[in-house]
Length: 184
View 1 (cartoon, rainbow, N blue to C red):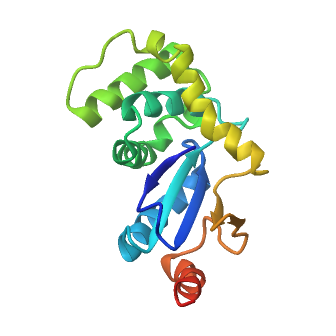
View 2 (view 1 turned 135 degrees about the horizontal axis):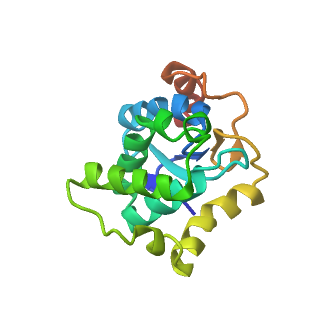
């Protein structure tokens, strides 16, 4: 359903529903990275489930590109998502008011080339429309819908929604919640 960092046997499992174009998801991203580093793979597993909000026009194409690039590898996905969040202002709706989808594909090709250090196949747009890729990209979005997720970021801990945590939560806020679970 998503891209995990940490062990699936860890006693605490966090599921983070994020949107690549969402400024609040971007704000929460550094905290998720710090959370993973602080607790380590043995204590906390974090699964990122990328979803697409209806008002983020570029998010769907960016998600498909990230899924294509990662090809199932969670580390690549997490690293590329970090890379994209660092450049979010370039593809936010405001930046794309007068841009086309082809402009977005060219931007994505440039991002991938910069991220990988290799030239990108100029037919990336065609690759992003392949049915298998679309199905893979829809999987975490459908999971988000099945969980009742309607905004991002939304966090679940051990299967229950963690509505006390938000994009404004810092590592210490997470520690208050997770330490209590780990001390049981």
